[in-house]
Length: 306
Ligand SMILES: Cc1ncc(C[n+]2csc(CCOP(=O)(O)OP(=O)(O)O)c2C)c(N)n1
Ligand SMILES: [Mg+2]
Image (cartoon, rainbow, N blue to C red; front, top):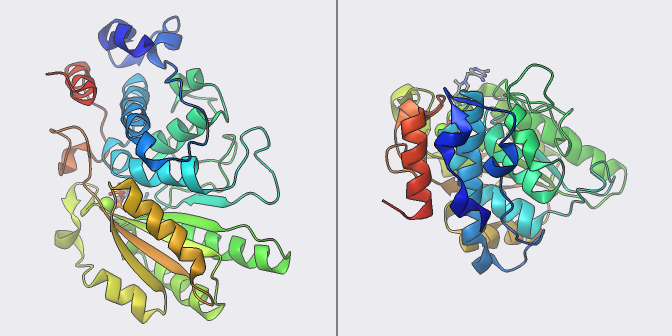
């Protein structure tokens, strides 16, 4: 596998990727697009974690923690569940995805590149001036349906997209990924109330419950619990899963459309920084790039070495 020959330190100097070795930095995993068997997704998830770290390291900027916590959620959505076509990003019948926690683009772009929306090599341009891959999600990136980054707005966008789908008699579904800290925003709850009012059973929200927001734990900033009860009180079908167990995540995502007449929220219990020991549960890695030494350590861990 090309990955075995990859030397991160040869390709990343001073946190900046040099232009030439990009093809080596983003090697092909060799997995077919749209895998159907969740048991095959483990290697893909590990590969995506590496892409996340390499992308952030090349830019020397970005959000690793909330990207790593969402890997299984994003893998389940894009490789097992959503109807979408990378050759036709604007296909009118595609399922919509809104990254409401719009700072977690490293995982979104890694997944989109892996699906074939744009070349993997483009990940090296992350956060550069004139790049399509800006730090917060923007619709100029192929496959991105909503420009996000100002927390609290994505669920409202999702409500609009779900209403539009109903008006146009389309049967696409709308998936919105929220952060748990993001749920401090009042607009989230305005959107939640309206989604229940309009009985939007084509709308599925997922809350990445990683218990950290920015530089602190969510409990210290604003107590969210009982979070599931809050969604239930807003008349949402409310499910809870281990957000790192792909089969559980998929089970909930598949069960959601069975619920008629109301939207579904899946509270996915996750670990911020999942997969890299020194990033796990560490607010320090909410929004900073690993140093070259940290990157090397993290990649070794993800390879199962050292
Ligand atoms: C309206 C708004 N306020 C503040 C910020 C700055 N900000 C960026 S990420 C973040 C914390 C988000 O935490 P959470 O929603 O839990 O996301 P995750 O843990 O998944 O990274 C904050 C406060 C923002 N992007 N938008
Ligand atoms: Mg969080």
